[in-house]
Length: 184
Image 1 (cartoon, rainbow, N blue to C red):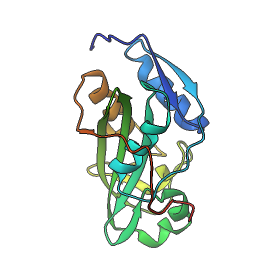
Image 2 (cartoon, helix red, strand yellow; image 1 turned 45 degrees about the horizontal axis):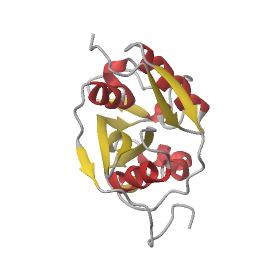
Image 3 (spheres, rainbow, N blue to C red; image 1 turned 90 degrees about the horizontal axis):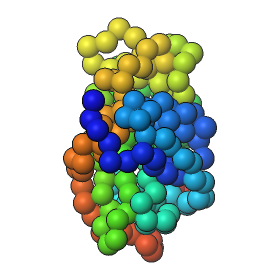
Image 4 (cartoon, helix red, strand yellow; image 1 turned 180 degrees about the horizontal axis):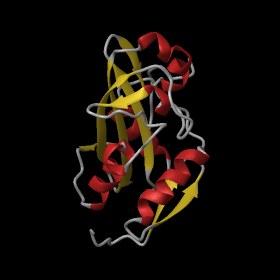
C-alpha cells in the first residue's frame, strides 16, 4: 500500500453517493475525506477545462472531481445527467468512463485521471448510481451496478494516480469563463 503524505483531504461535492464512494476509496490509503459544498456553475467545455474551472472556484488544495462518459456516436461528455434517460437507445455503443480529480496549488491546477473502457448495455443491476446500470466494462459479465470492484472504477484509478502523485495534466486556472454554461 502507498504511504500517504495526506491524512485528510477536502473534497467539494454535493452528491452524497460520490462522497460516500470517495470516503470508502480514500480510506484504503488511511485518508479521511472531509466534504465541502461550494456551489459551482459548470462550464460547457471539454472535461479538463470543466474540472480546471471547478478547481479554480474553490479554496486552494480542495479536491474537485468531474465525471464524463464518452459514447461512440453520441455527444455525452460532461452532460451525463441529461443523457441518463436515453442510454437504452445507445445499447451496443462503445463507451469510456472518465473521472478527473483536480486541485489548485498556487498558480497551477493538477489533474489526476482514471478511465475505464466499456459498452453501453440494457439497464441491469440496482447498486451504484448514475450510468452504472448501463455500463459494462470490457471483458466483464456484470455492469457497474451489479459489481464495481475498484480495478473497474474510474474514481478509484483517479485516486490512485493522486496518491502516487501522477498527474495527467497541469494547467492554468480558469477563474473567469466567457463561454457557454452547462445549464444554458
